[in-house]
Length: 498
Image 1: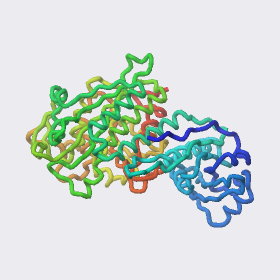
Image 2: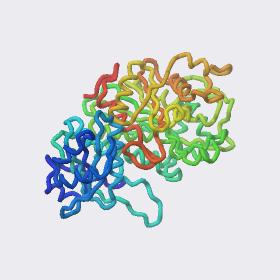
Image 3: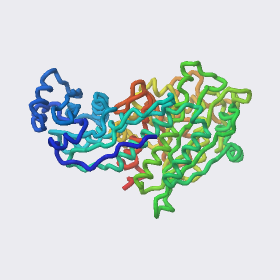
Image 4: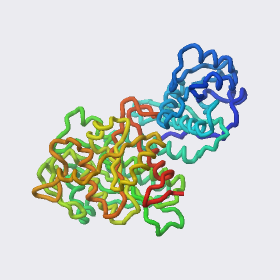
């Protein structure tokens, strides 16, 4: 991954001298007082004339080039009154895309006429959008070079900006995007494990790998059923641990991620259209890993673990098949219905293994079901929890981060559809309706008793054209949400982080 543009020391005001130090700038003004706000900026008459040349609606933006010595390019965004975090990120992303970012080395982030809280939010949105826009995904073309040369982001504000957090969250999001974009021959289970262990060494994290031999000894029959079809015995569960000083006796928060490096569907083989991008089926593990790294970079005050369920769902003579009955690590017997419901199988044993340490909470992330995409589209992700009093803070974290989630039903009567005549539970229903809910009810069986648990079905992990401030189809969704949930919200039974 390339060197990230650094967030420079803030400047108090946008002056002619500051503009002469910038190749370009994002300027946010209130939509309902735009002309007045523009009048307070350098080159006010020019900016007001540009504003008046067309009908400007809230949430839109326009661009112009200044007649200063460096011909600074401005993208001016009209912030709607009471704009949501998502709306600000979306506007900031559009503003960044309107610039010739490949030619920009120094980018300013400024506002005019906004209240203090809105000013800070817009500066942070601008930084997030600039970092996302300047990030280069993996390229394998001969002679390919990085597209962007952006080196500095210069906030122009008197508001306090948490630069360490902003940078850590942006870097975590881009780490998810990078890993998810890697082709399956580069990020197979062995490659994923090496990448995670390399990051662990860099950030002082401890690791332990549970390979297939140890998982067999532990009775992880659900996980191993999925991996049987692979010709390579490189699957397993990787645990990474962050331990802040003086917190040796504190129970950790466990982050669990589905890490299917490729998913053929197994015996129930996917058609071409639905198999093509199945190298992205590991983004849940990427979110767990990247969030752990981001929290460690911020010296998060609680212990945190990441449990990565790293595997492939391949087709072959030994692949698992419908109507098998397998036994998971916690003793639950599972009647297999569909081999393409492999994510809940590997997560079942990973959740059971993570539960053995009695963590303070378990938060799992997975690109698990098409049902969640049907329910919410790729603009939201679905959330499920065994703690009804978590629903409000979970949704609030989605709103405050701009990575929106919606809490789905978790009523016990859904379990009637998962009853099996020959085992403790069926893996999934036959018709697939409501599969995102049934998958969550299935997973709940493998979470230890009395452990608070959140499951996020990452329907927003990929979206054609990007989402909010993130360009490109791979969104990196999850790190911003988790940062808000763990750093800002007070989860009942868990408490705040500060």
